[in-house]
Image (cartoon, rainbow, N blue to C red; front, side, top):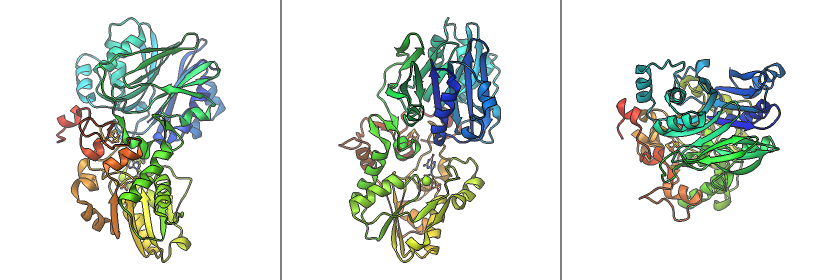
Length: 465
Ligand code: 5GP
Ligand code: SF4
Ligand code: MG
């Protein structure tokens, strides 16, 4: 999901709409904005579909007045897949000291247990979302102000959470102790903003100030600026390495590093680890593009756009049902026959999950007359599901969970198949000596099976680590 908030500007909701538009790649199912103005109190709008289809309409934006607003774009990882509008964030709660709205990116790994406990104690849930627990935990806290109630609530929550929240006067941002999901602070005019990624600061002309640190909570007002607190026990950060590989936008900066540069460097590492004789390096657009550029550069093999992407389609994977995903590949990608025919192709993509995309693309390339297809993947085999906010399928559906690399090569029908090593990936992400196996610098559970937070709900449901 993508989250964005701003305080201290005129018509904050317009800034949030722009920010969410720049974060649309993080969630395409639905979006919502809550604003507050002294005259009208809290106002909210939640819609299915793209930000640009709704939050550009003057009548809707005029219904979201005020200098303070937050928003969310949704990508369902927890909660119902056939999303109901009641699952669309931000969520709102009314407390004795006033209202508050929250928007959450990540996934709460003890949400089932928390929900059960809260329902037993009288909470009435409105949605199927794990994030709603936070509101109910806040309602039960005995603290006298909303930020302190949020601290109380989040201390009971396990898993991955970057949260943007607001009261009548305050903008609040929090990252979980491991900092699994991103969150950055920006300065816009006299105001402040919080965003999942820096690419959304650029769109509103905000200056990047710094990242919110793992385990940090910031409480921001227009008058007093940023106050920082540390509600959690300190922990060694474990940022999601897959943000670098796929999830974030390449024009964002994470941990002081350009995402584009990391991806390009993955391609360089991949060309060193898995060279092959070929005529053309082609990305699967757009997710494979920077790595393909790096591969071509390092190998000396020409780069070309052998696959053309229809710009009017979203991200295939993020379409939540299997059927839509299956159609998606052809709706989205087509082969550039004139370039491909007769050539030995190095095909570069960011990841193999179920293998559905890769198989179809390989078929399309062979139909177009490619002589050979060598598949190079910019991440290690995805053998484990993510429980921290990226929607990987159940373990059984992951190709790499059930097949060896050689079996995958046969299954995909390509001439060769190679994945970047975990160490190569860490090097590309700026860790010169690779992965520190005794204390890894990132979360890489979907590749390694080493989960930095025990996925309690999933274990209860029978998942075996
Ligand atoms: P597959 O066809 O192997 O199931 O899916 C792999 C494709 O899905 C890749 O092209 C990748 O860009 C895309 N993808 C989109 N979202 C995700 C995600 O959340 N996780 C992973 N691993 N791949 C994703
Ligand atoms: Fe990221 Fe993978 Fe960890 Fe999920 S399991 S947080 S996708 S690295
Ligand atoms: Mg892709």
